[in-house]
Amino acid sequence: MVRITLLVAFATVTAACTAPARLPPPTTTTTTVPPPSTTVVAPPRLVVPARPFPQHIDYSTPHITPSATSIDADTRRFYDFWKEHYLVGLDSGQAHPKGGERRSGATVSEGQGYAMVIVALMGGYDLEAQQLFDALWNYTRKHPSDIDEHLMNAMRVPDRGMSGSVFGGDASIAYALLLADRQWGSDGAIDYGVEARVLIRAIENSTIGPTDHLPLLGDWVDPEGAVYNERSVRLSDIMPDHFAAFRTFTSDSLWDKTAQASKDEIAALEARWSRLTGLMPGFAVADRSGSPRPAPAGYLMGPADGAFGDTAARYPLWIGTHALTSNDPFWRNRMLKLSHWASAVADGDPLSLDSGYELDGSPLNPDAGFSVLFGGPLAVAAMVNTDQQPWIDALYAAIRTRHEGYYEDSVALISLLVLGGNWWSP
Image 1 (cartoon, rainbow, N blue to C red):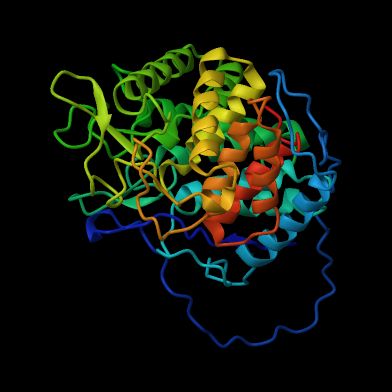
Image 2 (cartoon, rainbow, N blue to C red):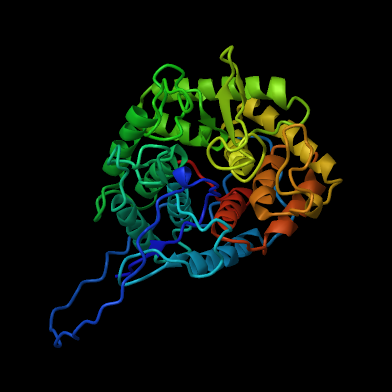
């Protein structure tokens, strides 16, 4: 039996009140070697995956892919590196770093969800995928939020002395459970379908705004709060592919409302704040008139909260993926604008891209340099731009073998899966 836990070094934290909860350090104990036993432990049942990697999905939207013929092989190599460096098996069952730690060294549930999605999609190539997935899920359930026990503990709640959830983490975990249900079925040790239904219901009850139907920052948010409320939106929490999957699975029309509210939020922000670039901020809040605007610096995570920084970098990944799978013209047009801006500002050279921009396109830090955290999602955005073959080829060459840390590498690996046609909706 493989026992696996996960390092999720993820979010940049600037204030103690918003720092994600950390696990206690591992302790060392001395144990007595047990006498020999004749008990035989049966190995876990190997379930043949229904959709083994690679899948080579023909996305419904007219699109391009990188010209490279090595995408599957590159994805396998990237996955092998990612698994070796970031999935850590310990007898104690505790997560700890094994190299490649990100700058902050912080832990949030989004990293756990990304790992579960990746492992489910790599089923068939990785013969341990289901065991890894189950171990990751079991670890998730051992770390519940202090507020809604069905959600995962992800961050210290500002000014409340407790830990709460993060919407994007729980949404990714729920999406991964739906993938697992389709990949391996739900008649094994874990009923993925039942667990997904419970988790999605908790997400609906605790992390969707009751009036505006937008994703809350987490289960700790008072919808009518003065600072954090139902108009406080993390733009990387707008995950229309996930919303569509939840709608199909639950038949709950709430997800139609969330999808439409998300479109309205993006359209209003772009029209006023990023008409020429299509960039989105890390967080948005409501102004005095009720219209969305970029959050101020230091709103929750750091100085780039109102800019296209590390938090917002995932936005083109989730929107571009849904544009590919849905052929929705609204989301496609968002990626057309953003991708053409990125190619132009870099003059066709991805290594000229900076790691973060103001919404008007000016660099946050001209010395930051290129990162796969931005390059991977921008490559996905380029897929719906059929006139950008040289640009997507250059982006692919820049990310295919570059490793930077857990968060960056996880986002890049999901991007590689999408680029190779290996992202499929449950």
